[in-house]
Image (tube, rainbow, N blue to C red):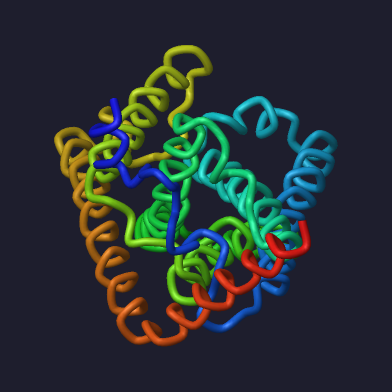
Length: 263
């Protein structure tokens, strides 16, 4: 299993370059704060959304988990809370717990990271390219909802790509991301079978016929392209900030030696 884990970026020690808890522009404390704020924002978004829709549109509440947009946002919320806690521990004690957890948990964290830095762009492009309408900003609630779920999602994901040292994520996570989207598409048809609605109109074969296959393949190919672009941006960022990354690792090494000297 060691070889399999290593191919997925789960080596021993895990994350030796501290990529998951450092940034080329933020201190670890500020990075932790920003991540926790992003996680808190999405948590409040869900609380307010459920509260509002429970009163104004209970049907939407029942259908919440049928939408890829919502599932992707849940992933963002979970990631920013998890990453924020890990980064807080690193900022406070110069270490972070994930490095000492079972390798399966490390693998799952990297898998979640792969979805967080790619799925939001799929959601944003699909919505504004295929689904947006005159009602997208017709009311304050609609404007807030679509800004939170179809704009800020990609802004937050882009901040992880450009303003942290996360990635590049190993290519082996690409088929996992594609499979995840494929499983979601299957879930969309389960939603139609059980609740008699399609979460996204372009999945309706009665309305779009053979175009449905084109849309599905388009989404899957789009995920592949986005993964490749994110991979390239991550590599370029690391090259640009190589000296700063070396300095960060050196400071961490000195901090660990200082702590050892006081034991």
